[in-house]
Length: 519
Ligand SMILES: *Cc1c(COP(=O)(O)O)cnc(C)c1O
Image 1 (spheres, rainbow, N blue to C red):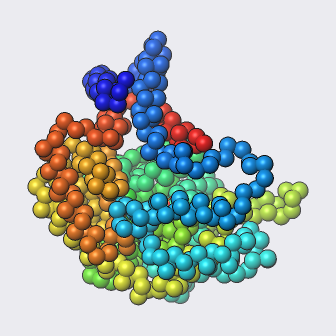
Image 2: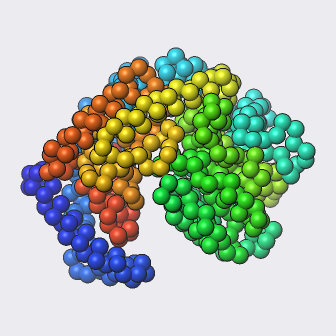
Image 3: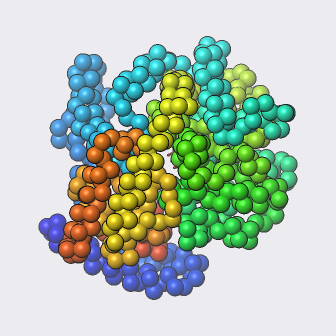
């Protein structure tokens, strides 16, 4: 089958499946789950879906594996080591192919600073520390100095008092490998705290639907029940729904500053007071905003209280590897009081390998990444972060004005610099595809169908905001004129967004990851 025919037949099948599923979806979710299981056991259905998936993934594979033909692949160790210079040359080529796209500001999020001389500086710091491992604090005491200072600098930025009165109100924390680890650790900490202090054995956490998927991952990994609460029209969490979701098993409530999909900040003051009144934890996820909001506030932008200045906030996550401008692989998790942090730590007093302790999930850890995060923060300083925030927010104003000038599009909520847009008239995924054709890499969102751009320093370069606005105007005009052009990814997003059978979508995502691991 040629590509076009395959796409059409795929479309037809998807439409048919969609109709069936939409009909089923009106039934109760439990019935749906059962229906999904039954449907998959029907002879031929699983095989049909398998075929459908396989053909979709075959189409995506060339884009995911662009080097298959040009560069040698190593399915097993080369018998003799490859010459270092040759390898470096190959790595330079690969880097050169990928650099342009993010360097020139075509990518949402991903690379948050990206200036060449700055990267060179971070690389030198990394090189000096590449052998260090905070697990061996006696051999590498410099690493524990870096990590203690990263935590302290982040805490002070996020509302820790200069002189804590006691252990209970001191803001403490650890360096982690990324936002996900910070979140997983905080949730594990609340679970263990609640089990020991309150005897809660069936713990529940409450999070807005816009909270990062890492909370769902934490719930899966640590056997927590995650209760999702909806957003109001302004794309911020519904406080009344949070109140109704509380049970005697609630161990923590979550809010984002801001949330990943829409860049909006939840009503954290009300939510954290709710948690305080009921005496369970409140986590502000500031992975995205931790190194932006404190400076946006200084610049006079409307930033509601979000950090430890709120009495109810008992933990926070803030990503040094996003707007902290460190190399990828570090984040900070913070707690109110040392006692809470103790529930994160792991210790083994009886191991034959000796006394063992480790603050986070990993054992050995890359000390060089901590050194790099420390050097990023110290070299940039408060003034540097303020300046970076200023230009990013000015760029955001340009982009928001551009969006407001396109009548077919609407901005969701009132974001600062992570800007989601949707359309009542057009298929937003087709608009996204048209933007992809123009070189852009945006994030697709669903429920509701939307796209977003997370603005970084790459977008503050001269001409980038103007290019975005022009390309978006052209993309919308193209989709209006060519509704029949379904695009490359639009059908996939359409499928993923509309299939009520979430298990099927999960299967598809697992197969996608399988493709990534193909040599
Ligand atoms: C990026 C992000 C995370 C997860 O961070 P990773 O570093 O990708 O693990 C969590 N929450 C929010 C709001 C984020 O933007």
